[in-house]
Length: 371
Length: 215
Image (tube, rainbow over all chains, first blue to last red; front, side, top):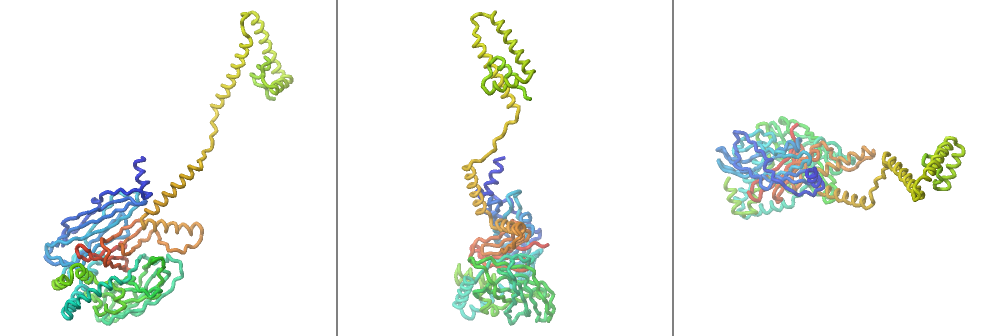
């Protein structure tokens, strides 16, 4: 009796540091006709440790996947679920900006932590499945339950835009111009302010401070097929609730999806990209439509000072037409000071900058010339 | 009227009853009680008879010693009777009192346990515990709580530079990343939080996301 209860008591007091192997908890389940196959799954130094009144599973799995098709793969999204731990949530791991040829292999890391109560914490399987694979011809395979087709296609469009932009810089200004652009991008990434955010569905008032209605200002991008007309959100302390926007389709094609970027300005004048407001809609040419969200965003305190939101700016960050084609802001649009200050670089720009940083300009030029 | 015990009457009849007060009380009772007078008379007659028999007894018999032994036997018998009566009664329990020293040690141990528990409590469980305590407060006191509360049944997505997390009822699933350089955090109001990083070993762009599950 004592031998059984003592470890639990010690664990509750946070005194147990024993770890056990957790290799058995990983379950990979890919479809039979999956374009990628698992060559190896290494659980690495995964462990399960008692902490406080909970068990903490620390999983560091390294998967090796092989392209089993004759097409080049540009992106893969794996879905990660732990149904017994968080039945209301799931996770995903996406690798984008890939260029994997037939029969080539590539690694995928899954770094996961599961926290569950100590009681009844027998081995909980972590399931890994496939949500989608994007090929170089923009064709797609997979159940797409997490909308990974759109996400990875957007990433691929941005990658093509940015490679084209950097190639043009190289052609027009030579290596020095490309170097300056890389250094500029590195500096912007270092200076870009970040904000911790919580997303709570339902927008239920949890902060009893008096809320106020704050109107959106809009950053209008000249080529955007969507024009934001007006918008507002309720602000209460460090919470932003229920944003409401109205947009107009000014293109000649129907739109089925759009995403608005959302920039917040605090009392000190600092600006942060709070998040994006996506909307699935059916917007005919010339038509207006409201976008309503009941979600609440919460911003934890920064350095002991509560974030006081004084202003909001919205901009159209992507549009999907009903024929499946996409619109994304051009490099010229992204060059506006407001966006440059807060917007993260694309997946591809971040990858290219990393190559420049680690391997130098020659390796970067060689990488650009592959495409 | 309460009669003296047989032992007291026997001792009184033989002139062996100890204590002035006892003798006076027994004598006063016997003077008023015919039954006890008869008892004393019978005992004295018996005593007289014993003396007569004693006259026929061996000359070297020590009567004083014999009387002392008899008196001692009577006292032992009375004491044994009382002891047996006590044995039959349930023993009165002394109230259990914890010494102040033991209480102090126990209190210190409790404080150490609580501190260790709180320090080692993972963040999601701590948040859950705080939210539950906050929920109890207004119900118990009727006062208004001015701090943010996360309703315990809500699914919360959290995105920080350290990782992303989906929390539900004190349970949590986090996707972390091995390197912190160039980490980009994003959230979507449709119900996802994401973090993107470039893997320093492979150079691959990896985006981890957590979502609300579909209803």
